[in-house]
Length: 145
Image (cartoon, rainbow, N blue to C red; front, side):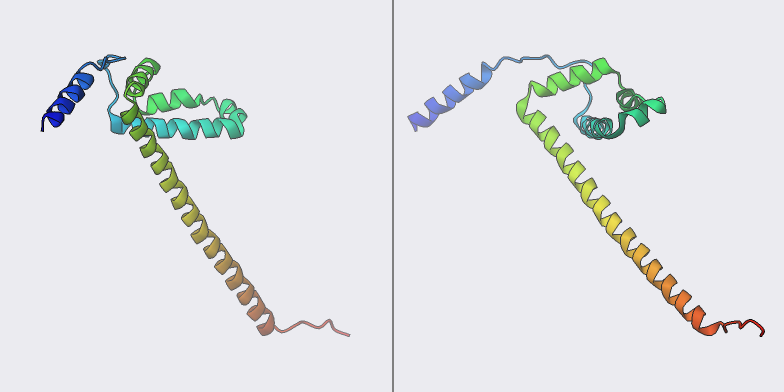
């Protein structure tokens, strides 16, 4: 019993001495919105890696686009990211949610592609059958001799 009390006091002492590395910013982005922003940033970074020239030719700055979409500025994003990074368990949770969301989106896109491919294949085979049956029903014209 005394050991449990001592252990509890030691744990209380350790946790009460934890120093906050970064103060919570006044304009902190909520966690759910931060997940969406981080997901968009991951997609933007992937797009930059595939064809940045196409984005530039269309006058699109991907990072600015994300900031405008979520009505934030770069300072607010950096401050919020730094704050969440100072809380490793929270930060890990955020990124696990981002990863899960991206994975779900990937699986949905694969499923949509399978459905589209199946429909395309069905359409091609139906078209071939129709063309084939039309050839059989149309009499061939013979040239006069």
